[in-house]
Amino acid sequence: MQTKRKYIKVFLVFTFITSLTSFASLQAQEDKFVVVIDAGHGGHDPGRPTKNGYKEKDIALKIALLVGKELEKNADFKVIYTRKADVFVTLKNRAKIANKADADLFVSIHCNAHNSQAHGTETFVLGAKNSERNMSVAKAENEVIFLEENYQENYAGFDPSSPESTIAIGIEQEVYVEQSIILARKIEDNFSGKLKRKSRGIKQASLWVMHNTYMPSVLVETGFITNKKEGAYLNSKKGQSAIANAIKDAIINYKKQLDQNVGSSILGTVPEITDTLEDVPLIYEGITFKVQIAASSKALEPKSYNFKGLSDITRLKVGAMYKYYSGNTSDYNEIKKLQEEAKSNGYNDAFVVAYKDGEQINIAEALKSTTN
Image (cartoon, rainbow, N blue to C red; front, side):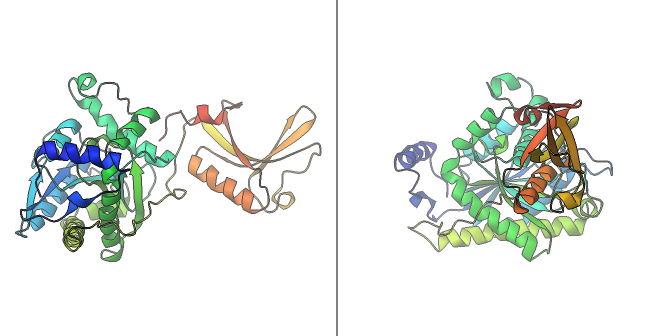
C-alpha cells in the first residue's frame, strides 16, 4: 500500500480540486497494508494524572504493543511503532514516522481521565468540528508540545488554548476524515458489542498527533483510568488484551472492506459522529451558570410549582423587574441540559447566563475560563 510521496501530493491537489469526492487511491494493492501504531505519551510525559497510581503512558504502550503483535501474525500487514519503550516522542515526529512509511492507517492509543467517575471509550478523528468537551480534550492532548524542546520552532504559531489554532489543524487532513470515521466506528462497535463496554461514540477534534498524517487516522481513548473500576480493567492484562484484540479486529475488518471495494469508494454510508450533550462534567472553576427562564414585574415565590416543575429556582430583582432562574452550577454540560429541560417545558426563550464573583458576565467570557 506504499506510494511515493510525490504521488500523494499530486493526489491531494487533485482531490481538493474535485471537491474531495474521489477516493480511488484507496484501492487495495499487492504489497503489505502498513499500519502505524502510536502509543501515546512516554518518557518524561506520563499522560493524564491519576490518584490510583496508573500511568497512561504505560497502559497505552502495553495495548499498542499487543495490537501490533496480533496484526503481525497476519502476513498482509506491516506494523510500525512510534515507540516500543518508555521514551518521549514529539507529536511532530509521530506524524513524520507515519508519513515516511507511507502508511495506510495511523492509530494512536490513549487513556482518558477526568475528575469525576466518568467511564467509557471514545474514538476521535481529526476535524474542525469541536464541541466544548471535545475542545477540552484537544487542548489537553495538544499541550504535550510544551514538553518538547524548541516547540516554538516546530509548531510555529500554534497555541493549544486557541480555538482558531485547533480548528486550523483539522482542515489539512479533511480528505481522510470519512475513512477515519469508518475505522473509528468499527473500533467503537467492537468495544460496545464484543466487550460490552460503554461506548461514548465517535468524536471529532483538532488533535496535533494526527495533524499532517497523510492517511486515515484515529485516536482511541480506551477508557478512563481515573474511574476506579475501569482504571483497574485498563491496568490488567485481561483488559489490555481484550482492548487490543478489539482494535486489531477493527483494523482487519477495515482492510477487508477496502479489499472488497477495489476500484470504488469504500465509503457508502458514513457513520455519524456523536454530537450529544456530554454526561461528563465540564467544570469552570469560579463560574456559576444559571438558566434564565422568565422576567416579570410580579414577585412570584421561587418554588418549583410556580415554574412548571423546574428545580432549583432563584429570583433576582433588577430595577422594577424580577428575573427567574433555574439551576446553579459550575458544570456547563449540566446547565445546557437544564436549558433543554426548560425549553421542553415551554420556556422556549430560556438561555444560559454566567456569574463570576457574584456579578453577571458575558457567557463567551465565561467559556474562556479554565476547565477542570
